[in-house]
Image (cartoon, rainbow over all chains, first blue to last red; front, side, top):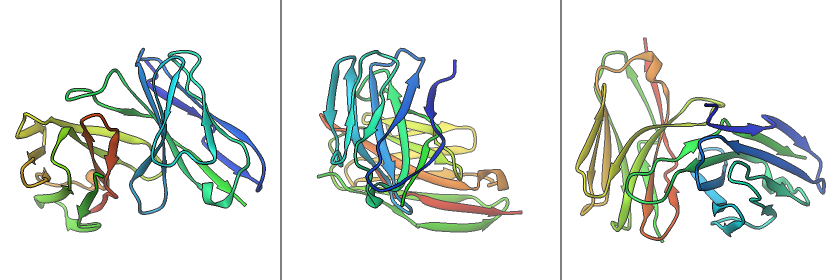
Length: 114
Length: 111
């Protein structure tokens, strides 16, 4: 059971370039999330999904897109990279929502846009 | 809008000390509160989850308490060890909303 995996671990982009951050979970979780973490700050939710084919915006969705074609995969797309998107990106998943459901996190992708 | 704060922002203690980390939230209508540990350059590891109906949870040397009415949670670490050095984050989930994270407390336990 690998849990939540993310690729790549590190990436440097030039302004205006595009890339996709990959996230896969093997726990058959319905819910998946993308967060970004800026230095000294808590995590902020970018997008989330409650199941295959269903996605919704979080707190900071501008500049990002997502898709959820399968239960396992939840890629995050940056179309026109900007310096403000320099951050560490975490993918997470949970079986459900509510009192007793924990979130499980991937190791993160450190992205620098220059 | 839910806001989560953590005090102190950083803490340095000698090995063996007992310590308390604090988490405060503004909206008490929560499903649960979760404490995480984050090692440098790593993802988050769940430590304890307290459901809204619970007052505390324990795991080994860790004890987390929840007081919804006052909007507070504490994480108590007994007999701290250098291996406990990490950033500790709390997160709350409100009814019908997503998780909101605090900024974390960076803990250093000195040998």
